[in-house]
Image 1 (cartoon, rainbow, N blue to C red):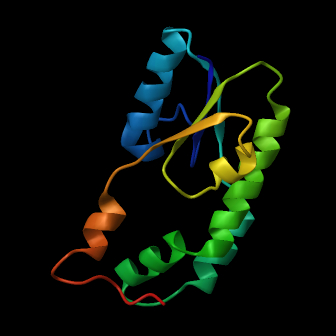
Image 2 (cartoon, rainbow, N blue to C red):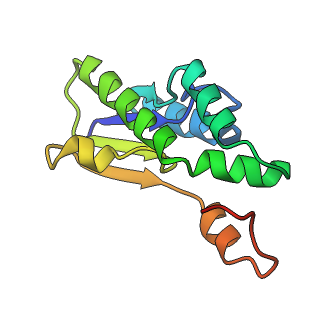
Image 3 (tube, rainbow, N blue to C red):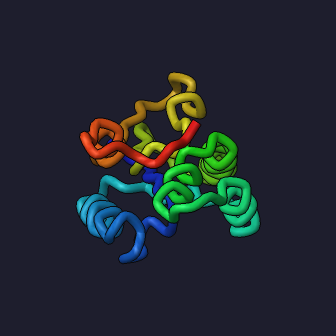
Length: 135
């Protein structure tokens, strides 16, 4: 098994996914399972456009809308597509951390795709205290 990892930021930065992606991908690399890890984070200017487009108060509502913006999701998927096209080594699996990109759609059955998720969104939507109003 040879993996390509995808994260929503520098996969080896201690700030990406609270450091879990860094530790996870380093361990896979040390075990000889990781071919490469890439970032799905789009250009900073596009992040700003999506942030501005979703501006609302309170701040929690703004963050919630930004992270669910489908334009951001599509931009991240396009970035992952470009990054995967640059990978020259052979690999059998794509492992994505988080869900802001359509890796299964990009792989189109050519590679096995896996996702490492947490339950924050599901827990937040099921929260008895509600969640920020987002259409």
